[in-house]
Every structure is written in structure tokens, then in C-alpha cells.
Length: 440
Image (cartoon, rainbow, N blue to C red; front, side, top):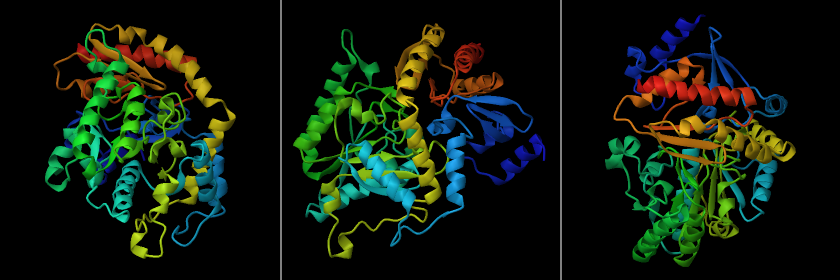
């Protein structure tokens, strides 16, 4: 089967995500069949290669076909591929739950598993509401979210999102959340710091809580970086103030670390940089190193206790068929082993310093605005009136062997943690070349 055959078959049979399928038919948006992956590179059926600079939608931490993760999955495959987690348990899910809890200093535990980030957020929203219901406070059923926030594409998660591209069509199906100001550091006025913006946003949060706390179950945030909203970055001060306000007004704090967890912001979990503890921690994407679908919600003893009862109806009766899949759990355990044994966070800090320097020509580009960086995430806004810029840049980047998918007019980099010096230099240089070509 050759390259063009796979293209034709995919267009005929597969409905691709986050895509206007007609763009594939007309050639506006290239469709690339991938035959294999190795390290940071993807290869098509004609052996053309593409540097995966967005970690395949932010999931692939240690490159494709990593030998240790491969070996762990193969070993588990010969033992147990799957078993129902209702009424049964197994070693990988127990070990993973214990290790994740330990990584939060055992402040969070009682891991509840699902398959993807949207499902994890949906679980946290339901748990928060049900907690208050079990405590005789069913009126606490509203949620607060940040301006420009994105937490997934199920109906519950769209309800706490604020990106019209994803939610506008489904507005009649959604329950409206209360939107509070984003601490977006780009909003700094003359003489202000990112911390000043965070304090202003926290004042807006306080006003909303003062007015609505009696009916609010939880505030949900992506700590430090709002991803799909445009790689919005903000100061940890906001998290400190928000956590204190949630405690004062008796409202849960949900930390959506689907994207920012597992080293993306420079620490294992982003909320660590604010020295806070959320009531719910949602994890997915990098949890399995980008290998298999798995997500988890960690919560507190107090939340768990609210469901622990003789009455079935006070339990959390939520389920997914593949909850706690053993193969995915083993991939996650292998990923945690890499963090524990290979000084990943320190290596990332060293890489980030070098790569930020390599991106200087991009940061100083005549049409670049608000170049920003947090851990292993880099972003820059491009000043252009071209409504087709996103697609033009994407095509030009692919032409230069790099996979970068702008969010509107924001170019971002979220590479796997294994780039070498030559790959980093190639990525930085060709990104600028792609930008110049897209703007020409």
C-alpha cells in the first residue's frame, strides 16, 4: 500500500478531529499518512520526516517508540490486557495510584480513572457538585472559569470553557458557567508586572465569589498556562490568591493539569510553583508518555469521605469501560520511572535555557509580539491580518520538515523532552523560515 492509497482511504473512511474535512479534499490542509515514529521524528510512507514539535497534541513526552515504555507495555500484554475495575483490581492500577498520590505528598489520592482529559474534567465537575449535594448543599451547582479557558469538548467541559470556536455551535446544550478575568500576563498595563495582573484578576475573582459563592461548587483553572486559549501564561501569584479565596468562600479548586502536568511548566505539576493544594487534580496526556489513553482525577480525603456511605446513591456512580486499563497504567508507571531515574526536570531546565536563546530571531521578528516561555512551552503572537495565516504557516512548516500547528495567530512550541542540540537548532531556524514564507 503506497502513500496516496492511504490518503484516499483515510479521506473516505476517517472523520478527523478538529478539522474541516473539506480542507483535506481541496488541499488547503495537508493530510499526511504516518508509517512510523522514532524519537522526535514522524515518518510517512515515502520516508519523508517531520519533527514532532508539538508532541503529537501535547502528549508525547519522551519521543516515539521509547524502548523502556515499549518494553513495559509488551511485558504487561503477556500478563493482563484488561479487566473491569468495578469489583476487581490489579497491580498496575494500585501501584500507579500509590505513586501519583506520593507525588502530591499524599495530600491527594483516591485516584479515579478515565480515558482522556475531557472525561477527567467531567469527573471532577460531577464529583464537586455531588460532594455538595451529599453535604445537603445542592444549590452549589455553578462553576467559575477563566476568560479564554478551555477544558475539553464534552458538554460539561464545554460549559466551563470560553473559546467560541469550540462551544458556540453547542450553546443551546450547555449550562453557562460564570466567567472571571484571566490573569493573562499580556494584559499588563504600563509599569505593571505579571504578578500585578494576577492580583487584578484575583480581585475580579473575589468579587464573583462574594456575589455567587452560595451557589458555586468550584473554580476550574489550568495552572500557569491556558493552552487552547492561545498559550496564555500567568504568574503563580494568581493560583496562591485563588486558592486562598476558594478556601475563604468554601468553594472547590479544580486544577486541570491535563496539558501542563508532568514537567511541561518546569515542575512535575504546575500548581507546585504556587505551593498550593487543589481539591481536584486532573491529569492525562503525558501521563502515559503519549502512548495510550488514560486520565485520572486525584482528590482529597474530605471529598472521598463525602461519598463513603451505606447508601448506594451517595456513591460516585460514574464509569468508563476501560477505566484503569492495565496496559495504559504500565505505560504510565514506565513514564514515572523515567522522571524518577533520569533527572528529566533538570535536563529540561537546561534545554529550555538553550532553546530560548535559539528562538531569539523569532522573538525579535518584525511581526512577533508577546514572546513568552514557561518550562517546556514557548509561544509568540504574530501581528498579521491574514485570516489564513494559521493554515499557511502550518503548510510552510511541514514543507520544512517540522510539525507546528498555530492556535489562530499564535505559534507555539511544545516539543518532546528528548531533542538534541542539532534538532533544537533545526526547529528554531526552520520555524523562522516558515514564518517568513507564510507572511510573504
